[in-house]
Length: 317
Image (cartoon, rainbow, N blue to C red; front, side, top):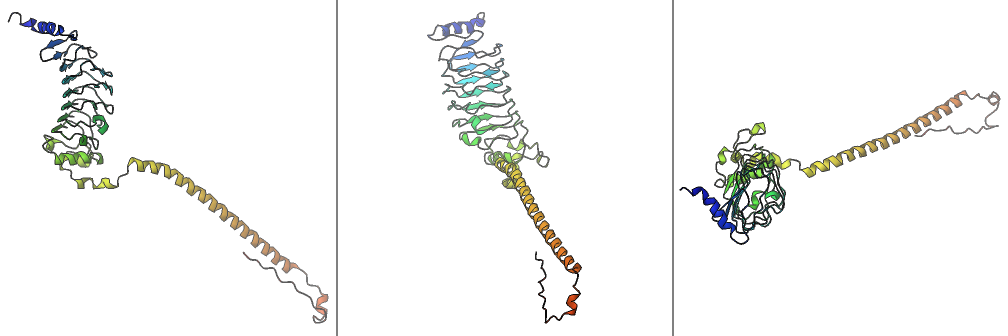
C-alpha cells in the first residue's frame, strides 16, 4: 500500500517500453490500452504514438475544436470521451480512420451545428451522446447512415424538432433520449411524433415529452398527436411555393399594369375619334342651317330649271 501511488507510473513506463508506443505528457496510461487525459487543462488533442490505444479519455479539458485527422494515430480506438470541453467546432474529417470506434461521448459541450458527413467514417458506432449541447436543428446529413448505432442521446439541447429522415438512417436504434428540448409542435415535427408512437420502447419516457409551442399545443404530449392533428399541413406552402409566389407575383402585377395601360390607351383613342366625328357632324348641320336660300329659285318653276340637290352628309360612328 505504501507504493500504490507509484502504480500508474510503473504502468506508463511498461507501456512506454513497447515498440511504437509513447504515453502523452500529463496523461496516465493504464492497462487494456487505456489512456486517461481527463482534467489535465489540455487545449488540444495530445499526440499519441501507437495504434494499441483502445480507450482515450479527454473529458473535462479545454479542447474547443477538433482538426482534421485529430485521431489518425490511434486507428484502433474503441471508446473516445470528449465531454465537457467547451467544444464548438468539429471538422468534417476529425474522425477519419476510426473504423472500430464503438463509443463516442460529445456531451456537455457548445456544439451548435455539425458538418454533413462528420460521423460518416464511424460505421461501427454503437453509442453516440450529443446531450447538453446547443444544437438548434438536426438534419439527416449530419448523422448520416449509422447502421449499428443503438443509443443516441439528444437531451438538453435547443432542438425544436428532428429533421424528417434523421431516424430512418438508424435501423438498429434501441434507445433515443430526447428530454429537455423546446419542442415546437408544428408541421415539421409530424414525422417525429409518428416515430414516437410506433417506437415507444426505443424512446423511454415518451409520455413526458411535451410541446412547448404553439399556444394551442402547449403541454400536449407529443406521442398523443395523431396524423389527424397535422391535417392542416397538407395544404401548407413549401419553400418552392414561396419562391414561385415571390417571382410570379411581381410579374403578374407588371403584366396587369401593362394591360391596363394598353386598354386605357385604346379607349382614349376611341373616345377621341368619336368626339371628332360628332364635331364634324355638328359642323355640317350648322352649315346647312345657315346657308341662304336664293330668292330667284322661288320664281322659277322647278320643272323648267331643276336643281340637283346634294345628299346630306351622314355621320357614322
